[in-house]
Length: 244
Image 1 (tube, rainbow, N blue to C red):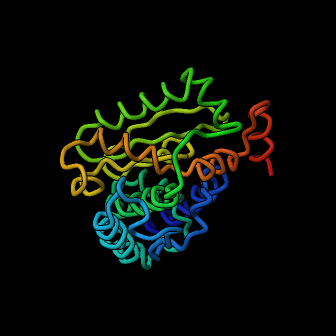
Image 2 (image 1 turned 120 degrees about the horizontal axis):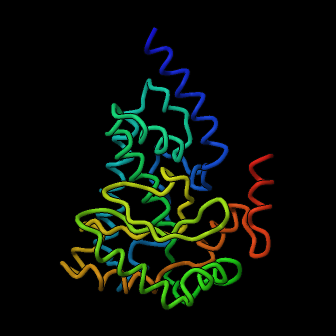
């Protein structure tokens, strides 16, 4: 009886969270390794082919495989990926599910934000929001890089936005994601050592500095615009989106 009640509560809350925090990345089959829009050697010299082979082909594949095993025959089995992260974060019994779902979500967002033709600066509403928040794009880059460099141990540093379009730089330990705080992840840098150690050894800051050269800003802009915010009346836009 207790188990049945837990399942019903879990499904009820999952429907609420899905409406508010589901991400475009949820359209990617979560139990399949995400396909990349570039080859493993295309991001050199920022990220080497060998690092890509291990990071995408081994580490991410491992998270995908473990998540598939952990969620089978559970209420999580048919949930969108971001919903699994949110719901498992609230349960002390589902740490392994949270860890692996978080890392699948994180890495899907991570690998799809790169391009061998990336770099430069964002445009449009996102560019305006960054300037409003940090004064300039260069000041934002400095703050972001500093947060990534100073995060203790393994984890992620994120650019995220709230439901009003306000931007935040968020440090997340291990496999954490801003969706657990009600924020939308826009850009994330992996500061686990497996993401950079073959290429940069212990020079994490050098790695983050180099990654700016492969950021595909149109992808980040699309994530920001997909939240429903606008540069003129973001609160009204988001409230309308939530009412639908």
